[in-house]
Image (tube, rainbow, N blue to C red):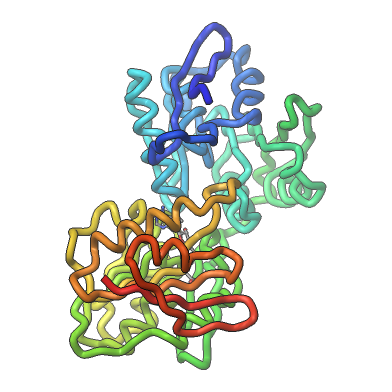
Length: 374
Ligand SMILES: C[S@@+](CC[C@H](N)C(=O)[O-])C[C@H]1O[C@@H](n2cnc3c(N)ncnc32)[C@H](O)[C@@H]1O
């Protein structure tokens, strides 16, 4: 696959992040191309900000980097790193990249919104925009045709303003929305719910995995978190709201718990949940990272993991595989990796290949909890 996007006699070399040998997935899609083509003839004011929201791996950030004051807004550390790497590879100047909880720049002239997979995040972002945008700001959404439903357009109408759509081109469509400041409302508080059987209260920002209830996989894993006075360092890998790490912290009060996720909203939720649920919140550290890129080898006794099985809209097990490989590096001798997975995902083969051992510590009709030792 050629990692080159050529439009209007300009070529960008664009790669996904992290770069993989024999990558089969492209770093941009037809909706990015449609947005670029549509904006090509627009006159832009070099003084007013351009906002790019939910850029996948920086295709839009790279294209518009020299066209004005660009701010890219993303909840994904991976997308941010992809954008930085692609800007560099194309000798483009850095752009401002902020997370979805940060304050947006005032008085933008143009907002390009790639639709997120999660409608809760879309609603949150539309409300954030409605509180900020002047009426003359041009707002253009974009996605694959199959991702734009009547209900999606209703969300734009309800939370931002009058909405129209374009014709489809290469199976992508644009959404045009006229911001109406009269629809502005105070931003909603994060969702909160209890897990009474574990005496936990979970706060969830909009883009957190399973943000309206406890994931059924996590529910099974919670029953099988070990307790051992010898543990000094435990990692919750792909922590989401941190429910697994919190339970591990309660069971192992002398261990340091590190919760890792690539979503800024997940890490912010996890930090809030440590304060809400732990007597000593400092026992838990939450950090944004791609898998265990930032962790030292031989530094953990136990890693708990409920891995993701997609990256953005692509279904893939490569992140789970990277999580398992990183865990092997980061575990101390005799350390354990405990993984929950849907039965059909076949994580046991992968764990056996990597660690040379795997056992089943629990199962129900949908999920299996595996354990491998280093
Ligand atoms: C299946 S969810 C599990 C969430 C939580 N542990 C639970 O059990 O409810 C997987 C999590 O992995 C995170 N994730 C995806 N890719 C990642 C990566 N490359 N590095 C770190 N975390 C990642 C996702 O944001 C998501 O929160």
